[in-house]
Image 1 (tube, helix red, strand yellow):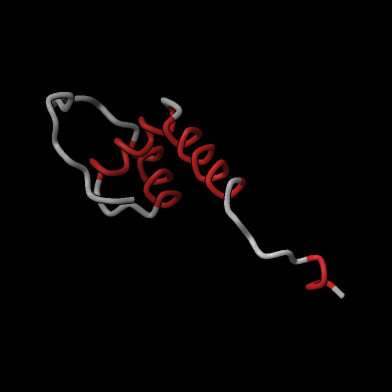
Image 2 (cartoon, helix red, strand yellow):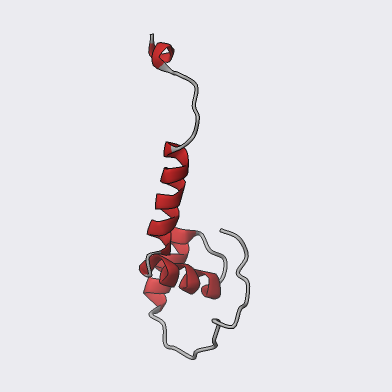
Amino acid sequence: MGPAVYTAAVGKHLVDIDEDALRAARAKFGSPTIKETVNRALRQAGGEHRRTVKRRLDLLAGAELDDREQAWR
């Protein structure tokens, strides 16, 4: 995932975060910072992950691939 870019939609918030949940999310995502972990989790919860996967599958489905019928023989 690329670096985050600040826009007008970014705000600062003081929140209490469950440390065990944060550790688990950081391990799952492999994210180096709390900020990246929280933003990724929020985007995923908001459906961005699903939309990204759909776009990538649509791209793959429309790709002009070589005929592989004989590749398995």
